[in-house]
Image (cartoon, rainbow, N blue to C red):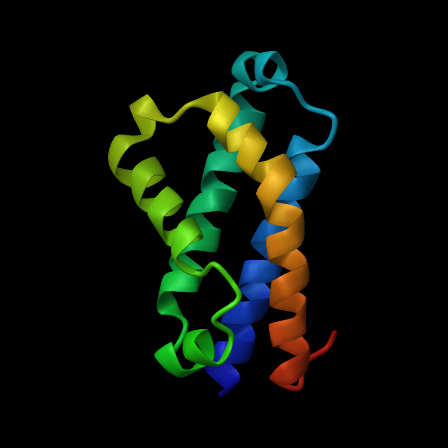
Amino acid sequence: MRREVLLISEIIDAAERIIDLSLGASVEDLDADRTRREALLWSFTVLGEACGQLDDDVRSAHQGVPWQAPRDLRNRVVHGYWQVSTSILLATAQDDIPGFLEAVRVVQRSLGDGS
């Protein structure tokens, strides 16, 4: 279970980073700031990889969390990064990640690490 707690912490950290990187940003901002855009891509990659490493029991116990979506985006970033739309990244960061983060914090508390 310790491994799962660490993975959940990594997921939360990546999601918080995604939110921070996208805060107040526009597509034009991200397109003009290569470092920020690449940091956002990396954070989505970490998020998806950590979701993929979670034990099936944890994912099954929390089926309301869309675990597969970050994995799918990670695969898109890693295997087709030249075709990743900045507008989709930004919309995902601003519209989907805050709710995902809150759901994962519930998982964290259920695992006994509510930090």
